[in-house]
Length: 394
Image (tube, rainbow, N blue to C red; front, side, top):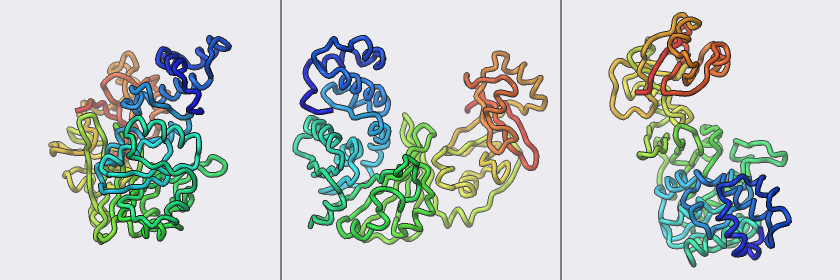
């Protein structure tokens, strides 16, 4: 969308109709406006997508929003704010600016920020927004970011990069070397221009593969929001030895982050104790499981695994601060066909399966169940047998 056509009339239309269906608006007002209706509807559509992801920005009626793909790839305010607390300094550069969410929030701990973006239209939108949000703080650099830093004599306190994870045929890419820009091949250049490098990677990233690709990485964060993994962060800082690399799994919740830190050395040296279902079942947060803390998690909190591959844990007495969902076991279901009808006459129960004979969808279909309510049905393997348990969140 050209900035010049964002007229007062278009802006008012967006404000007046921002809660309405974009497709219906396009049909109802076609040929009846003296501004670009398609551009207005695109703004409304993008604001719909950003409402929960970027609540502060969507509340600002003066800001512009890009097309859907750029919105989908943008970080949320929650994850961007978390990243902003990890690093600070005088100057930073974002090599893959996109919609500028990470650039903006990371810049809070820097005096100056440089935003790089190859897409001219997207860069124009971000320039418009940054001039409104923080005038004079940002430099907008259009074009190839690697060419920019290779010509620059400046040493940046932070170089931030979020490599594109889609290939020529829109396939998703999970190895760092397959992404754009290729930070593996250009690692030496990035190091020569940086005091710290922070990489945002796909939630599907193979972390150990990434550490093999860039062995200088010192810290790793796996970030989940409300138990859904959103991104993996990799940090290198000049002058700091690797030692035992810290892996931090963090779940961002409304009352603050909940986390679990460990090392791969600790994980490899830990042993899982197997046991039966007790008073409580514990499911580690998704970020903990993604990080690979299977044995160390159980050992740290004195929990017993139900099966080596189930990744559910049991205990009779709870330890404070367990980073996971805790379920109180009400009863074991031994005759599902009969008991499930008695326990859930409306068919509403949240179904979870971990290493079970049926998937959650298959279990729901077989017994005519639908997710809903506050009660849970958990199917898993206990020892060499499958078990089904009626539970409530503790």
